[in-house]
Image (tube, rainbow over all chains, first blue to last red; front, side, top):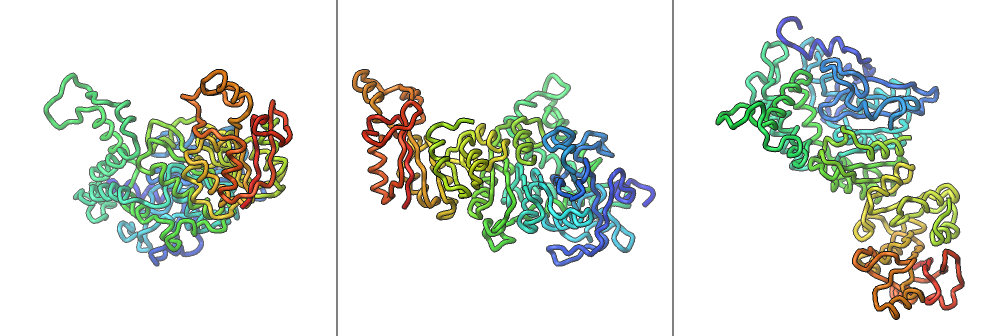
Length: 376
Length: 195
């Protein structure tokens, strides 16, 4: 893979800081295809109890990764939930063995489109289309490999919450507690629409080259950046954007009558977009957004969400944020109603936060208390 | 921990090991008591998010929801007991809530402040204004109690709904008093119903 800028393939091969588990059997997928020699890169924090009863699996969101509470090897930034996971924190690594694994289809060491296919070339678009349930199949295989029969808790926000729900619905004995934050049981038309904008931006970039860009100098960074910019807007609230940027201009006193990033909000989005391209693979973005769009737990269970959780013994906790318009409170409530109908033990709270969907990643004392109380 | 008298009466008469839904569970005091002392499987519903957060952070299963809307999703007879403490008088339609209680629970406990207590009557009769008393401490314009009810009103409603009053308890000055002349003497009432 020498020469050029094939950032993702070498990273996958060397798998920087993370441990990589190779699933010892072919992984069957919802599409009917099978993934051979599937690899899962993961990080752990804390110590697994001798009876393996203290494991907490944290599932990451669309563009997240396994660097939950440790420094990201590419950006050098702290882990994405370092304020939540650690010694004495709500998810207490003095008590719990916390696992976070890169989902399949992603690009931080787990098998994905940038990984090498059996023919020695990157899969690119030959990588099978996966679903959220397929991601969870990979995670369950990892738990098997780690000797963890039942998780003390599975925890996830956004797409991580989808994985937690999918685990609870399809492997009901594998988690005693299920904590789902700012998530949904199905992707709405609006959710799919925003993702389609992102995918079209990537595929419209000439450098995308039908996904075969791993060997070439040019990567579809422009398309990926636009995809990120569009998505990023959906993670924030209108009030949050107004508060942070308003109509303020960036590094100028007056309008320039041009198309530079004149407004602070434009500059911010461009920064978010370009920063993202340094750590994320465009094809992974296509695959993971597709998996989210396919997500509909009720559809997997005869069209009735309550059926998905019939007979479950797990305790559930759902949390939504009042300014989250990506996965609004109504989506969490819909899940709560289904869990009530299924007779499951469920808690639900809508928290107030100004920052929209991204609130689950930000400072929030009430969220901390809920997570601590539920996971403890 | 000392429970409010109406909650203590309910806690003392819930069969141990029951499945219980506490509607308007507040900070979860009754639920915690039922789980720890009676081995019950207690679930709660509460409108106030801050209270829900306190319940969840103490390990209780509580859903933020509105009793006027969110009871519909529970299956029939999903619980041995449905409990509505000090919440009936705040409901948009107390009669419909009572129907829902008796649908989701095999039995129901309902507690409420008695608007016909002599203090309330005296305050209205001699003061000529909406009573502000120990049992009803909030002025008419900001009280959450939008449907004041008396012991006799509640008995009538139960009869109209075809519910049987299994037992009743009455309280004044935080102390249980007898049933005679309860409509005059009781500040609070607790009823156990079935249908």
